[in-house]
Length: 304
Image (tube, rainbow, N blue to C red):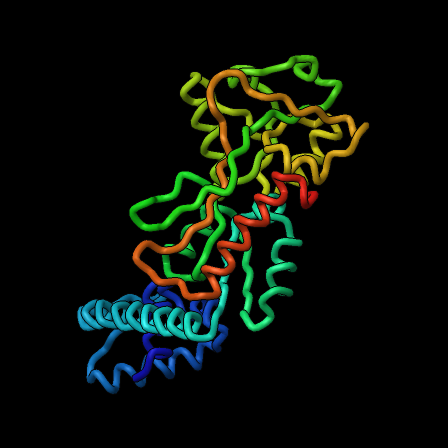
């Protein structure tokens, strides 16, 4: 038996069905059945009970699953640790970033880094901010851009910037004439918002609940562009930060950004490395480059 066999076994145990498992494993049900039979032959026992509803673990199968899951977890852990060692030796930057943050750091920052250090291998993945943290916590990547709050017990955290969350409305909306709004002004308003995989969702929804009402969410999306489109068409309201909306908003596009008056609604950008880990020369150079780049933007030497 090998690690692939453990993966097949664990998938069948989880799904309880060969057809479902075959879709996840990109194998035929016949191929999966052959792996299971070989495992049963090697263990000299039945690992699954075949029923009309699918596949159920036998008593031997339940015991085998404990070891199969442990073996698969240890294999993944070993592969990640070897990857990290190779990355340090070669000088690799493996960046995981939450959506939107590169708009603040700017793509030009990455381009300039690669020009300065062509010998450093650079990888970049982006995803919703909660997923970025899950990946990084699971051992993926060696540096991350995420949003506060980040655990300072797990990570070395560098704050790259903090931005107030604002309300985005159409210029024809009654709230557009206000200089400030409160969280209570959102009650009953049709809201287009980034999904539960984004921290901004929790922040706004929880604030509304504390104020005594449920946010009227019309649509959850994986990106802000649809939110902006719906506000532009006066279909509802949304929330965002300046530098994200600035990429989409143009003078005369009919939308207005309004700050909140009641408390701090912040979008805080952080750069993370793992606590106690030596990330390697490539990551250290990248961290320094990002901080210097953002300083130059503040000083006006570079325009965003």
